[in-house]
Length: 196
Image (tube, rainbow, N blue to C red):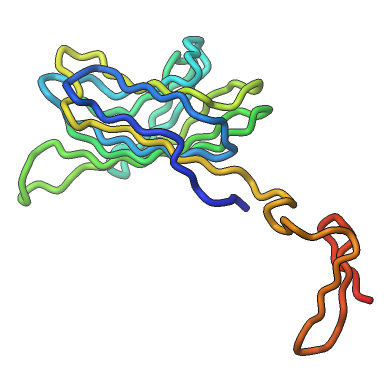
């Protein structure tokens, strides 16, 4: 079970640009919220973690609930929509010794106005690094246009609960009395309460 989510970092473009970067504290679980606003012709939004440019990224994508397509052995992870304003939520399991599993949903505005429903895409992917946790995220596009002013990326993180978060001030030998039964339990210094 994860502890409380913390905001690890956020960046908002004050002028149009092609890249948003954040360096963060390592956490076991990450949530990245991205809102990209286009100006001109933009390419699909891409990601890299910890400046890794090796072919260590792979993903599966479904647009609008359609059939899946897969991409393997790439040097980036991609949100596959071009020339559109996008809002994405990316969730990552970020354990150092395991491949990083990624789930992402994106809402896309291709055409302004109430007469056209937004589009959606779902992506599942992984970063195959098994040595390090993610501590840096780069988001970019490479079209002739740019992300417009106000485009933003925010990263939240949380760690798995550890004993210190569950019983922060209890020492070996602490006694708990159950008020409705009158039973007594003694804490053994780990995660166990033993009935007395």
